Image 1 (cartoon, helix red, strand yellow):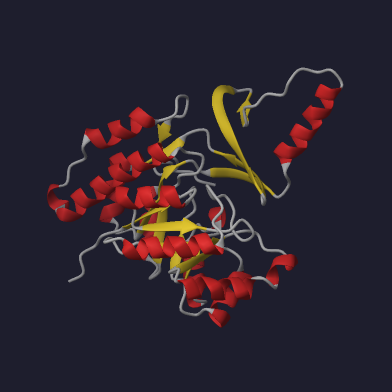
Image 2 (image 1 turned 45 degrees about the vertical axis):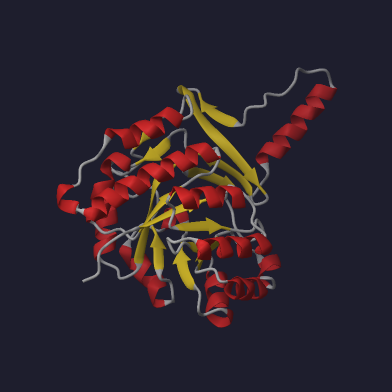
Amino acid sequence: MTVYKPELLVTASNLEELERLMVAGADAFVVGESRFATRLPGHFSLEQIAQAVELAKQSPRQVRIYAAMNNIMDNTLLDAIPDYVQELARIGVSAVVFGDPAVLMAVRQYAPQLQLHWNAEMTSTNYETANFWGRRGATRFVCARELNMEQIVSMKQHTKLEIQVQVHGMTNIYHSKRSLVQSYMDFKEQTIAEGASSPDAGMYLMEAERPDDRFPIYEDTNGTHIMSPDDLCMIENLHELLEAEIDSLKIEGLLKPIEYNETVVRAYRAAIDAYCSDPATYQFRDEWLESIQAEQQQGRELSYGFFFKEQVY
């Protein structure tokens, strides 16, 4: 009988953070190069991905490295994809995270040993879509962040694919391929040259109706991303996802200091291990949440996201 134990998947901004989060209890990492990946805490070149794979091999946890290729691919990238996926296979990553069929076809042709994790953000909302991609080679389905608990459980019950769910961190709510912040800063520099005051250094949006909320803005080579004003935190209700035997639980570390991410990983590691050691007697421990709250950025609330909401679209 196979004992259920989910994967604790995290992000890392660099090799130092990857090592520290590995020690803290991470089972897997998603990293990537800015040409092909978007919304990652840091850029990993192929050489750095290879180093990450070597570090993972040295871990007693049998840590896995996944390469993100979740960018919106255009014609200029197509010629580079085959060589890139072949190199990923050579250095030993376990899977490629993709949303574009061009990546899937390249992996199947040039690196069929790699697993395929389909992640198309908000469009991954039903199990028929999961099964569609499963028939084409995907091994994992990354659930949309807007799904509630009932929908996630139903997803698991109606597909043979692995199911991945985000359980902690900020989520993306808007993306533009345009560099909106840079355009704004260029405009502000012009106004300063004309005698205006210095531009505001804070990179966030505010709504007139909710002046206390701050929506962080993250800009990379793939455009501008506006993030949620609060942080998802499911550690109190993690047992519901564990009871449903969700395969992968992701902690999003984007725009967070290493110390914060270490604390979060340790807390979720402790909760997962406690549940899996004896599900019948599992009890949530306040200290897990309190350790996260002690490191939580002022002004950013911890929330359940859409997990317990009826309407998601």
